[in-house]
Length: 173
Image (cartoon, rainbow, N blue to C red; front, side):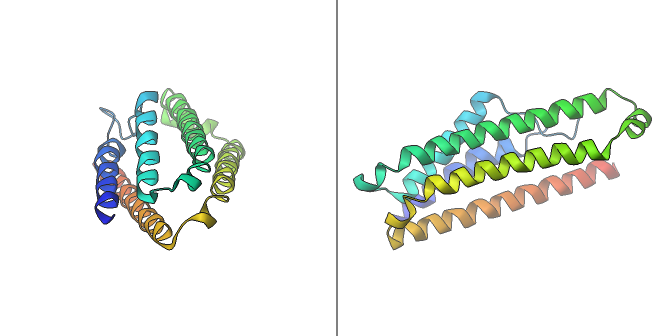
C-alpha cells in the first residue's frame, strides 16, 4: 500500500517538477505549458490521487464528479495564466516609463479580484464534489489522502521559494 503511494508521489514529482521550473529563453517568466502538457499533468494528478485512495466499487460512483471538477479547475487555471501572459506581453511592448505612467492600480485590483473570485468558485466546486465521497473513506484512505496533500503543499511551497530566489538572482544580475 505504501509502495503504491510512494510510486505515485514519485511519478508526480518527476513529471511536474521539471515543468514547474522551466524557463523561457531570455526572460524570467515561466514558460507557458501547452494544452497537451496541462492535460498530461492533470491526468497524472488525477491518477495519483485515485491510486493513493484505492477506491472501493461503492466509492467509485463518486469519483467522476471529482475528476470532472479537477479538470475544470485545471482548465480555468490555464485560462488565468494565459490572461496574465497576455498582460505581461502587453506591458513588455511598452517602455518602462510608459508602463509606469499608464499603470492603473484600480484596474489591477479588479483583475486580481476577478481571478480570486474564479479560484474561490473553483475551490468551492471541488469541495462540493469531494463532499459525498469523503465520509465513505476508511481511516487508511484518509491517512493516505492527508499524506499526499502534505507532500503536494510542500512541493508547491518549495517551487514557489525556488522561483522567488531565482527572481531575486535575476534582479541582482
